[in-house]
Length: 266
Image 1 (cartoon, one colour):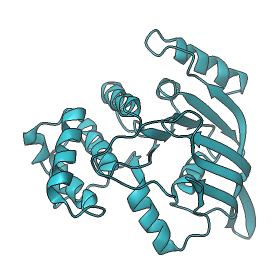
Image 2: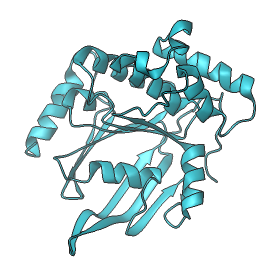
Image 3: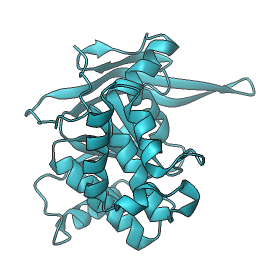
Image 4: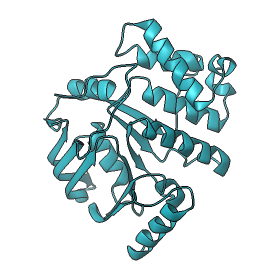
């Protein structure tokens, strides 16, 4: 069965328990009568509770893969299964319900509703899957505490936020429905180094609580926060690095990531 969204519960990882599996995943676009093969027969398993990073050169298919895994786009061929349920053939309505109930998203652009306060932006998403307004509010307050946004910050409107504050709101919104997987597409891409480091610290803390994360990035220091780097080239997996045996704190994981990427011509 699919993961059941529960606004308050925490995730607990099980060893070798896959949450996402793709089989011969392919995606083709037609541009000016020419077929562009963005993903090619891609097999990938994402374990529950893991932090998987997708890297690769421009045009390698990173974001396309993330969209296919999350149900934001459907593959041309192949399968995507989540908790053993094939979502590849879902209708658009069923895919929308799947994303709402089982996926969280953090993007470069946060796309907050300007007319709503920070809290109301988050509550609007939380109430899509729960009628218990008090429980959703409690969950939101817990997450805002986690990312360091005060009660005053929660009453602000999006135009009053700094880039770092807006991205922290994006993380809260992405987590409010306790998603099976949090998908992050270049979450630090438009932030300065200080705010970028803060966002990565928050994602690491969320992952330590058991949250499964799949993140696309072009930045090696960001990638080194993950447990695994999947490197794409021309729509296929060109390399796969397990970072779990390396330490984050002393830079060992970053050095391992740099060496791995250099060996792939990054």
